[in-house]
Length: 115
Image (tube, rainbow, N blue to C red; front, side, top):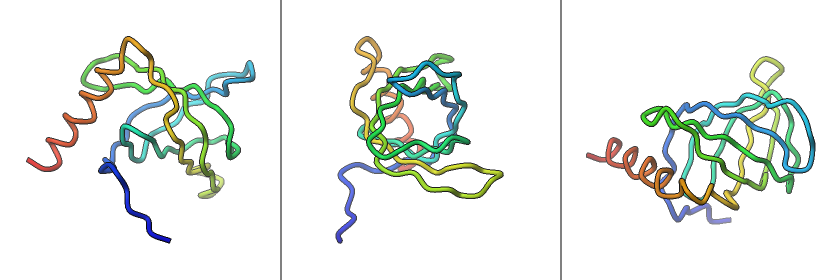
């Protein structure tokens, strides 16, 4: 299977707050491992199921603000009991008023990596 990506994945350690779309539960804290404009990989102490829809508050450090994302979980695997789960998700929706902010953050990090 060819694993070519359409966008460059940027390794970051940004703070997340995660909650399932269809349940009323406490917010779960997480941390990104990498992201693109199409998806994110993150760690969480909770196992999320493939196909599950999540709301994520993605905190952008330079903005002191968050962007709300809706993602569909593509995979989730246990790292270990201390570190929890490593998960990957496809971004389904970005908060309408903050799409440009999220895209600008991605391109800013891209410039930092390559220039």
